[in-house]
Image 1 (tube, rainbow, N blue to C red):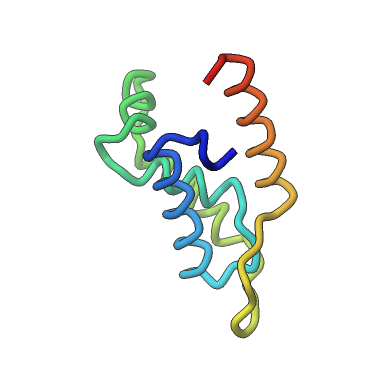
Image 2 (cartoon, one colour):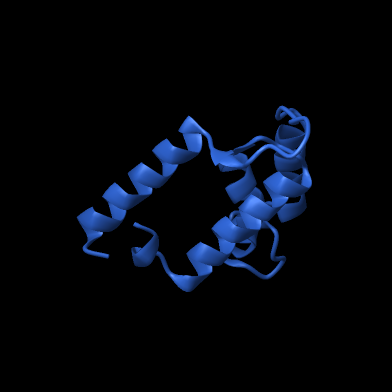
Length: 101
């Protein structure tokens, strides 16, 4: 499925992996991806949040709180995708397929 992702999607996943590694989380979680998508202040997610009359900073604070609750690994463990992240990616693949992407 990775070859079907857009360049921006691949960049968001790479950013999510970097965040997980920086935080010493042993698994890549959907929260890491959400944080990566919410990071650009002028990005699509921030624009969508503002169009709903909300502030992106409130979402970023909640994401940060969720990330802070994730387990932290010990040592140099290899990062792996969690089952929740794998399910998220499988569902994204199904949606892409259904839309003909």
